[in-house]
Image (cartoon, rainbow, N blue to C red; front, side):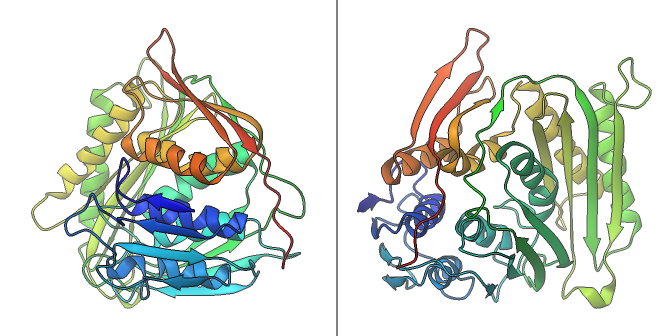
Length: 372
């Protein structure tokens, strides 16, 4: 199957989702105009060998890959069989380990195994153009586990910040192919905010800077009515953690916040520090993103929204998720397009009278394919 990599978002998401689905379904794909919407277009090192997003998927799916070179505008991925096991991928840079996880997790969920598989992912754990690892731990995985029934655990061994990277994450994946398909999800009721959690992290910097990030986040949240002593009190627990000097190879900081909703939804907000931003402002930035997500009225934020599309496509039965009043993100539209190109999943996107966008999907009930 030939896919146009310039469609909609025109970036790496088409590559990641298409390769994952290709591996699962045993469908060879040829992606043309790779990252056509980026400057410069074509593959970068983190999409191929090194960070090994494609190479990692190829190892798991025993795939043959052509065109995986820097600057390449076309990639052919021909999967053979998915093999359970323990895999390692090293970006050698600060490339995001979470994007390595995005391409490999769906595949390993259906590896033919009676025990867990493991991923050792090395590189950047807290980047600016990808979900921070703490977002995966505290937003994506809790939501996906609760509503789709997948099972995976993330162990952050070492943080890696731009530009040196050097982080290390161990992921344990419990394949579900032998016990059935992912469950369908219905998350339509928002409910109240029951808890706000968070972590301000830093390495190679004074510990009080983490406290300043927490202070900035708390002040901004209180201004929006989220505080333990508010009229409608909300439990707030934002921790500050400084990594030991011997456990990092560089300096950096950031913060991730998450709001748990009574109806089972999750909204996140995050920010990454740099030399030009005061720590207090970094905390405020993350809180602003969280507040924005809450004000938009959906049960997921825009980043969680696009990450669950592949799960909706693979799940058994009809899933439905209430999204924000601002319409779907371009990444979400792209994820839906890729899923419909490669699977028989049927998506329906509708806008309610309330203004909320609802995503519904009749999933394929994927349960794995027999090894060849």
